[in-house]
Image 1 (cartoon, rainbow, N blue to C red):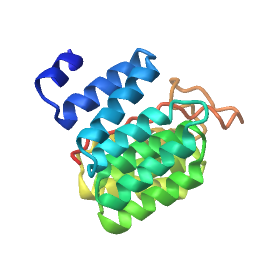
Image 2: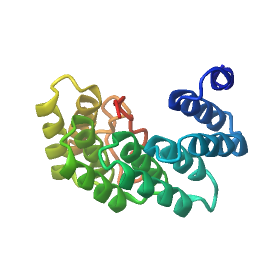
Image 3: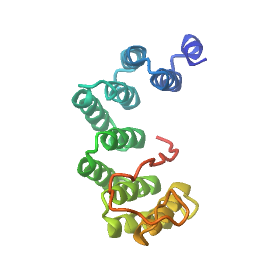
Image 4: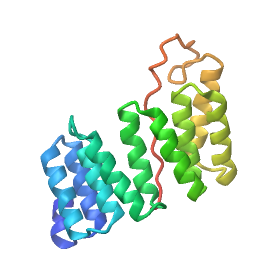
Length: 190
C-alpha cells in the first residue's frame, strides 16, 4: 500500500511508511533504497535524512553511517523531534545509553517537550538512575498530565524502586539488570 502511495505522492509520509514497512518485513535493501530516494527527492529535509539513518542503523556495520545521517538531520533542524527520537531508539538498541542521555538533554535545551522528558526518564530507568528517571517523568507530566508514556514509565519505575518486576504481578525483581525492555515511543509531531 505504501509503495502505491509513493507512485501517487512522493511526500515524506509515503516514504516513511514504505521504509518502515520494508524494515518490518526484514527487507533492508529495499528500505535503504527508498530512504535514499527520499533523500534524493528532498535533499535538505531532516526527515528524509532521519529515514536514511533509520534504515542504515539496521546494517551490522551501519551505526556510524546512521549517526552521521542523524547528526546532519539535527544540524538542518535542531528542533526536529522525530530525528532525536529515532536517534535515541537506535542508540538504545546498541545499548549506548550515555549517548541517549546526551542527545535528549541537548534536545531539551532547545525545546521542553513532554515526550522528550518521558523518553529521558525511560533511559535513566534503564540505566538504574532512578532519581533522575523520577524527575524526568514528573517534568513530562507537569507539561502534559495526560501523557500516557510518562504515566506508564512512572508506574514501571515505582514498581522497580519497590523491587517488583514491572512486567509481572507482584514478582520480586532479581539482580538481573538487563531485563528492562520495551520502551514505548510516544507519538509526536515533528
